[in-house]
Image 1 (cartoon, one colour):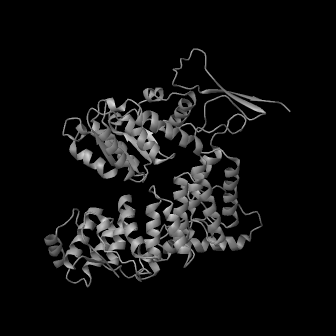
Image 2: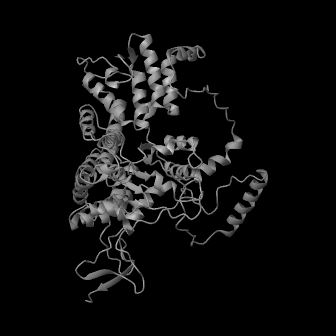
Image 3: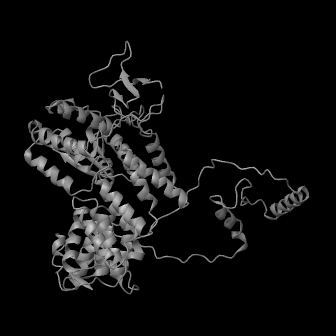
Length: 567
């Protein structure tokens, strides 16, 4: 099966549509790229067991003597299985295998061909020269795109390869190349490219092979058209049971876009097919649960814990932390009662988002420091990006340590966050890209490689951009700045909206508290509870001001009075 190119800059023009084909190509890409990465981490031992039954002393002494003899024969080897671990302890099998490695002859692993892949787009002449160096490859084009997929090459380099292939073959490019290009688009979260490929395949095929469906679902869930991933899930159901990864991606998309009921329905559907859910699916429910206070939702999370027990499933360390955070969030340390969450409900969030967009972004005074054209350019930029996890006020963060070089500080913060595989947006001004004693070009290029960046005109204000990007990305998105945004709160005309804005701000604003530049970045803790007088009927929790402690109007008390009605 082939596709036909007519151009390279606009993806919808890359292929010639053929609506009469009803099935996808027979090549299966699924086994090459779509693997479930499951592993067991080394766990801390929480319990130690001691034998209480009588022992055969003579037999034990004989075993000890034999063990000493074996240790001498091992010539100082450290590969003994620890005596305080049991047969089924995590890591014991690996230790046993290591003990036997010196007794077996292992063949050397085959030598793999290593090449230096292009780091920039190549023209036709450069690709011709590149191919000449690898004449031994039966299908150079398929082989090189596989190498690029393995090494996660940039989208632009992959596009130049497809353009070269199209130019040689009258615009024809094989499906194998295209699906691996789609893999790169999904990996790099180039959502607009994913949607372009989706439109083309939707027009050309009535059905796809499993790998194509999986990639498209994985890419679409991060876009405004995420519900169309559910249509692809329905297409899969017509011929087979969807994989647990397909369900995981759709559940993740539903939670990302605040559709909780849909997420639970998909989860029940997954269980109905006797599929064992991925642990990351279950973790997503707990992570989402930190932001809402709902007894029905909490009961469903408890059902998940019972599911883990009944099926002998063990959460990884990250999942365990998610469970712990959910379980302990918002509890009074004095009485154990649950305190109202700092996080907005989905309804409150949508209400606030609409108000901010109307009163601050569209109706505020931001045009005094920017232009409608620039704001529109930024809005289009955000829509083409996947939802962000953290939005960074670049200029504000760069000035955290006045004596340090500003570009160095910003790079340090971005690099540390990027290691956590977070989707980052850095907002800045154009002067930050100009070589200066405070701003080095090489450091700013490293920032741009690790995060999406938008640089506004030097006279523009950052705050409207920061608010828009954070709210547009969803309720999970946090932002980093020292600016308390009191001017923007003042633009909100009613007390309810101002209260919700302040509540949202407390739950989403991160502030760096490091004292020394270059040290590991730490952020001020975000409270999990709302600081207001609250009651559960038989108890009251009242925040109060300490005597002689001055509190500004934008601050909240840190002391609480905990009251119970005696029964």
